[in-house]
Image (spheres, rainbow, N blue to C red):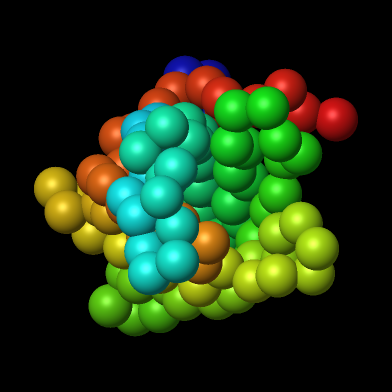
Length: 129
């Protein structure tokens, strides 16, 4: 009887297939750097959240006192992503990042430059809808 139970459990586990990995969440909070034509960037605080689910990359960012924005990208085999995000007034920011273990980074480049090391997180920074 015990042998039949063990065989049935093993068969069920094999039929279930591989377990799906949970999405990975990374965050960064910091201040901007000036770009040509700007002078207030070091006073702008930004929070960025990047969620990676397979090759799907979804990001949300919020400059203190502003509207939350987002971006989507596809993760390459080199663990990097690149896209563009629309910000206020229809302006754009270039988004470049990497989620390589030990070398995860993010950069938003537009009206200011926001860049830094992404930190793994077990919970989202922004509330989910």
